[in-house]
Image 1: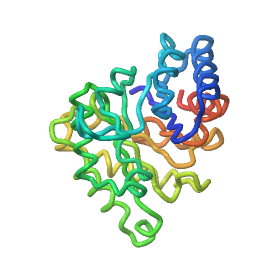
Image 2: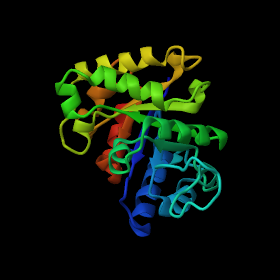
Image 3: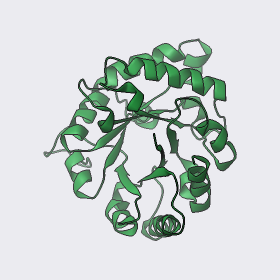
Length: 247
C-alpha cells in the first residue's frame, strides 16, 4: 500500500509562515511526484488558507481534533463537519497530548471517531505508551487497551489510520528502535483483527521524533505504513526528505 506521511503542525504557525510552508510543499509536489501520500494537519486557524494553498497538488488536509457533536453550545470546539467543510479529509484523534493535557479517555476518542466517520473524515487514531508503562513491561497491554476502547465498531480500513506514538519519544529526540517498532506494529495489526473488516489494509503510522536521518530505516520496518511527523513537518526541506524516504 502507499505510505502516508502526515505532518502534525500542532500549535505552531501564523498565516504567513503556514502559507509559505504549504505553498513550498505544493510546489515540490508539482516538480517531483513521490510514491507516497502527503497529509498536512495545521492549526484550525490555518485550515482554509492551507486548503487553498495546496489545492490541486495532491496534498491532503486534516484537522488536529474534533468534537463529538455536530452543532451546539461548545465554545472553542470544532465539529467534524466543520473540518470537512474547510476542506479536510482526515482528523487526528486521541493524540497523547490530548489524552494527557485534556484528560481524553478512550471512550471520548471513540465518540470523536464516530463523529468523524459520520462527517466523511478518515480518523487518524493515536495510541502509545509512556516511558513508565514501557519500563514496567506494560507497553503491549496499554496499546491493546487503547485500541479496543478507541475504535468504533464497524470501521472499514478506508475510514481509519492508526498512529503509534510512544509518548516517551514525542519531541524528545529519543526514537524507538526498529525492533521495538516492528513488535508494536505487528501487535497493533493483530489487534485490528475482528475490529476492522480488512486489517491488512489499515495504514499504521509511526510517530515519535521522526527525522530525515532516521526516516528511511523506520519506514522500512514491517507494518510501518508511514509516519506522523511533528517538529520536522514545520520545515519543508525536512518534511520532504522524510516523504522521499518512504519511496
